[in-house]
Length: 266
Image (cartoon, rainbow, N blue to C red; front, side, top):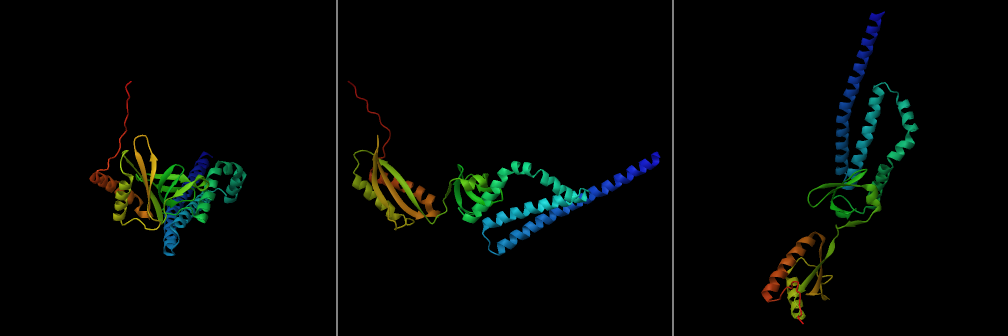
């Protein structure tokens, strides 16, 4: 009797071992196939000229779908009836829905982003207090690469419902405020700035540059300068103009102010 029980246990253990090995084989082969299919889908979308934003979103969606199918397949191999498994999922659907409500809103947000296109892959944006270049739009998150090369993940739900500033435009207005000493000849300063602007070939002629006396500050006369450039030239022109104005003002004898305190003695 005992020998029969031992034999039965051995048979059951052997059968369980085979089942586990089958499940592991399916897991390994499934992961290889998922990576291969995902790669093929992305290549196909790329060859068809699909927008990179859509490519990343569809690729992420295909990956998640295939992973779910792989899990169901492994559950079936382990002897758990897929119909029972589906019924179990349905019975706890409300709980899962509540737990994943945030991710569901992120999924919907990703679809809205693809539909209305407030930005695309490659754009430099600011959203949720974070700035960076859009690297990938996934089904739940959008990945930004910050100016310091740090990857940041923003949930699509909050991203689609919040304020987004997209800096990827054809033309941008550059603005400078230069302070000079009280007593400086404003017309002379304006003429000098106009000469500096004329030398800068990257400035657009339409709209024309604008120069005006901005404010009489506590220790300086502030002059505002506005000009339009191509979006890709914004920062280069901004920094180069600062350098050129500084050198030219010094050469022309135009003084920059510094904080001063006047003390009157009774």
